[in-house]
Amino acid sequence: MYMDVLAAALVLFLSLVLIANKKEPKKLFGIYSQPGKWYFIKYPLILTLLVVRRLKFYIVGKEGLLDVKELDKKQELSEHPLSFDAVFFHGASQEGVYLVAGAERHHEGVINGLMYIQHPDFGLLKSLKLPHTTLLEDPESILAGKEWAAEGLRFTPEEPMKRWDVAYNGQMRSSDGKLVQVEMQEKWVSDMPWFLYELELPAKMLARSIAREPWSEQLFETLKEANQTHYEQMGFMEGTLKVDGKEVPLKLDSFRDHSYGKRNWSLMHRYIYQMFYLENQTRIVLGLISQPSTGSHYEMGYVVHANGKIDPIISCDLRLWQQGESGLPTDELCFTFEAGEHIYECKSKYHKTVAHFVGNNEQVKMYERFGGCEVNGVKGQVISEWNYNATSGKFDLDQYTC
Ligand SMILES: *[C@@H]1O[C@H](CO)[C@@H](O)[C@H](O)[C@H]1NC(C)=O
Ligand SMILES: *[C@@H]1O[C@H](CO)[C@@H](O)[C@H](O)[C@H]1NC(C)=O
Ligand SMILES: *[C@@H]1O[C@H](CO)[C@@H](O)[C@H](O)[C@H]1NC(C)=O
Ligand SMILES: *[C@@H]1O[C@H](CO)[C@@H](O)[C@H](O)[C@H]1NC(C)=O
Image (cartoon, rainbow, N blue to C red; front, side, top):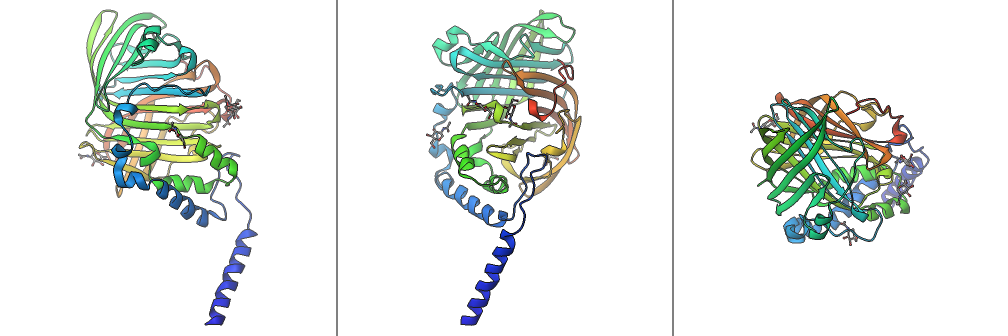
């Protein structure tokens, strides 16, 4: 017995020495951490930590932890200079209408805001300041404290997690450079569940990403600091769009999100975030994010079924560095992922891409991309956002000018 224990201890000791002497793998492209020699210990450790932190959530649910009335409204900005409060809306129809509109509030009445509409009758329309997005918040809206409103854009929460108003009233620029007068009035409605990232992303996926990174006090400090509140919800938009006096109904499948906390865009290496709107009313969100200070390759997303049931994505074979790492976004993506014990095979192809900067900061560039997709044989539409930091490659400003 004694000899057995001694032998086991010796084997364990020798294995640890062997592992300790192995070299750590190099970061791919100098950015993307690979599982290192201690990954097999780091993964269960961080997974346990994440699960323990979420125990209360597992017991009482998110409605037990959070009050949707406090969440789904305009937030007070903290003292911090990077404090922000952002809402974002997408819409797509199977007839080829795409809408992207958002507003990121900052201190001093600055809103990074934008809107694009691609419509078969009107072509591509974009808000006037694009490709820059720094707008001034409407003074009345600052006083009223309810809505996000700036230079024609207006997003108003009406009923938490149920109803928003999305409106645009002012000039927009069409693709031939002409100015047109636009009035858009949309009701955003949903009875689908909302998805809170910090609690509902699968702990296993987060643990995998964190276990791949080299661990340091700095990493955990940054992870703790970087807590943003971010939630998303699928829904529908219905209303009207009037361009130079010509009015058409506008009915879209839609996605929205709301995030607040602190955000420093310069920390982001790049990301790809896509939403799929399938003909059979299944919706899919898939994001790949590389923010090296907190994790060089996070994968996240979920499937929302037509009945509102959500299956988080638990694994995905798409790798950021294989898609447009040099700075030129690729025109199609084909990949597979697993959610709710199903494997999904997904092809998407973009047919329109527009580009802008975040605020007036020409270091950080966004591509909004519209296209079609096919998931396990079911067709649909895709809206995809590709973010690059200048260091990811030289920007060709004429590429995809909008
Ligand atoms: C971030 O975490 C701190 C404490 O850990 C908490 O007080 C704060 O509310 C969190 N902020 C957000 C935006 O979730
Ligand atoms: C944001 O991050 C960049 C890059 O790390 C850093 O240089 C800058 O100081 C940060 N900005 C603020 C306001 O902390
Ligand atoms: C993004 O670009 C800025 C300016 O070039 C740089 O300071 C920052 O380190 C870059 N961030 C990352 C994550 O590469
Ligand atoms: C819709 O299509 C998706 C993707 O092929 C599939 O997973 C889902 O089950 C379909 N939904 C219905 C209600 O048939």
